[in-house]
Image 1 (spheres, rainbow, N blue to C red):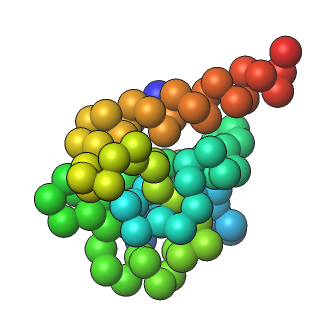
Image 2 (tube, rainbow, N blue to C red):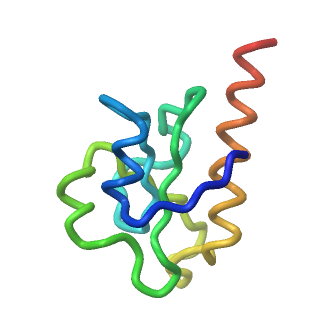
Image 3 (cartoon, helix red, strand yellow):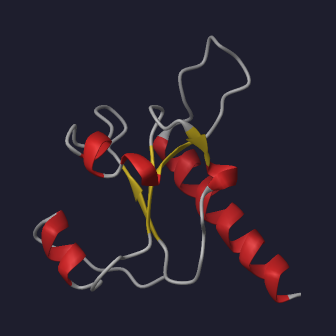
Length: 100
């Protein structure tokens, strides 16, 4: 993990160049995280626990939006720390499977 802090999301995007491998996670995603195109260098983007992603992301990044499915209709979502563990772990698992 390479940890960096940027003044804005746009500043972060500038460091990635063209067509960065972004994967967004939201309860509003139509595809599941099992369908996410994890690859080396992918950037996983999570919104805040209370508000989610900024509203404009739902249109701008619609094709890159994924959800973690819930087993019960009575549970809206996992908390952010759990989601931020589940999604990258699956990406690492799949990358390892491709290398074996």
